[in-house]
Amino acid sequence: MAKNTAFLGLLQLLLLLLPPSLRDYLWAAPSDHDMDQQLQVYHPIILQGGFSCSVLEARLTDAYTPSLPRCGVLKGKGWFPLWNNTSDVVDHDYMPCFEEQMSLVFDPAINDYRNRPGVETRVPNFGSVYGFSYKDESCPFCCNVKIHNELEALGYQDGVTLFGAPYDIRYAPPQPGQCSKVYSDYFARVKDLVQHASEKNANKPVIFIGHSFGARLILDFVNSTPLIWRKKFIKHLVLLSPTPPTGFMEVVTNLASGPTVIRFPTVPPLDLRPMWWSFASSLLSLPSTTVFGHEPLIITKHRNYSAYDYQHFLASLGFNMKGMLPFTKWVLPTNMRVEAPMVPTTYLNGVGIQTTKQVVYWDGNFDVSPDNVYGNGDGVVNWISVLAFAKELKRQHYSENIFFKFVKIPNATHGDITIQDNSLKIVMAEILAANS
Image 1 (cartoon, rainbow, N blue to C red):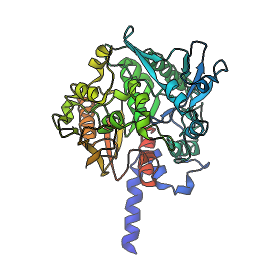
Image 2: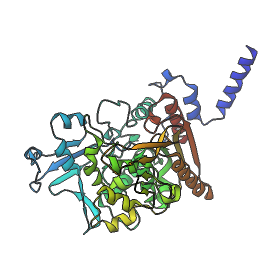
Image 3: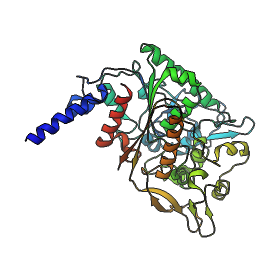
Image 4: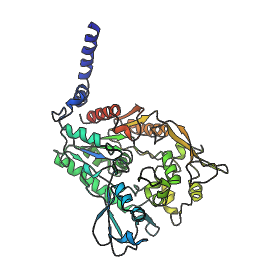
């Protein structure tokens, strides 16, 4: 009993050494995280969801020529939800129309992507954390719902101290020398949102929290801003399982076998492959040569493909790169390009989960499911890539004496890092530490 008392006393002393917000969160029982808030709201937060979380609305004009009569029934009837509820799309037999109206067209005249003629799109609820939502009922806590709930229980309010910047999932942030009108406009809106959130909260700098692709976009946005601006307006970045520029194998398998990040009941991913190929984002984060080297990523009995062979691999898939050579020169990776944000950053990632590192299409038929060879990672991003990315961020930050912390969470999957109780507690502790 005496030993237990001494241990508890030591634990209390150690807790006193922690930042107040982190100490309060760890000391409180789970039932205490309610309206009797444990945290004074310090800094405004912009919370970013993952790839499938944003909503997309569409409007069809007279210039739209539908491939099927039923695809034109909403022409001239204003805005309607296009990427929102997957069950509705299937139940109303709108699947071929969805694929047609979601697809992009690459225009070599402007070296950029655009909608099909007659299709206009927009992302609703910009500025609100409610701009992110999962598209079916299979995962009610996806899209940072639990983090959102925890922050609201601690006193955060949507549109006052808590914000969101939903995005169009089809486009990719531009690389140097490449244009993207969609992302130029989006980054300008995010910059305005950051300044608005700061001004609304006594000019306090903002904390960004992003998951998966949302975390990648945070990094790309921050790196698009002048250093003097980000040091004034950004307090901290909290990156949760970001999709790294060093690349990961799921990008390859999505190109070959159809997307796993856009799911519909009863619709095989392979059926969505033509639409997926039209997205600029489908080519983002291919495994880089610097990290993956000449290791075979795609194996067939006739030839293997490494990170040096993407143009041959895409051609073998039937991916049409006609007119896209200037674009693919920037998108297809030849080396690892990591640009650190140079503001305080905490990077959290799961580890110890079976993750695809090679795929085998032995007969060279990419229209069938492959055999997978597994390695370590978070179930989506390969651990070798996570480590390379984290190491380079740390190197650049430490060279300028800027805070950087890398947190490994054993047995936390890419999607569940914000859902599982054990990983959520770690994530929340780091958020509150950033808020001190």
